[in-house]
Image (cartoon, rainbow, N blue to C red; front, top):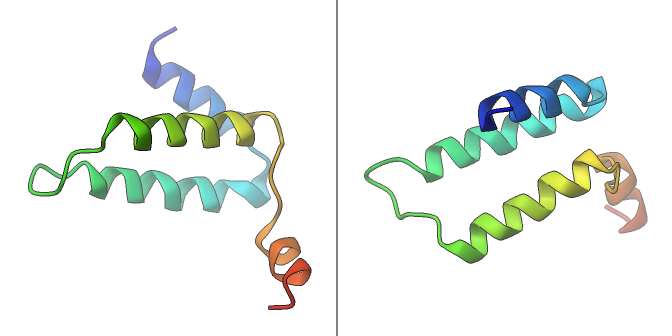
Length: 72
């Protein structure tokens, strides 16, 4: 399986309520890799990998839950 195929599979497996967050993250990543922008370092890429793994494993909270827990 190619990297692009794996990404498509991850997106396809996301629950609908998490798809928008994934879209925003991917857009941020796309803009961060702009040729005129700073390159992503190994630490940032590793952090992104951990985040994707957390999403895939269901280890996340909705924005509403996060805000409720913090009284926002």
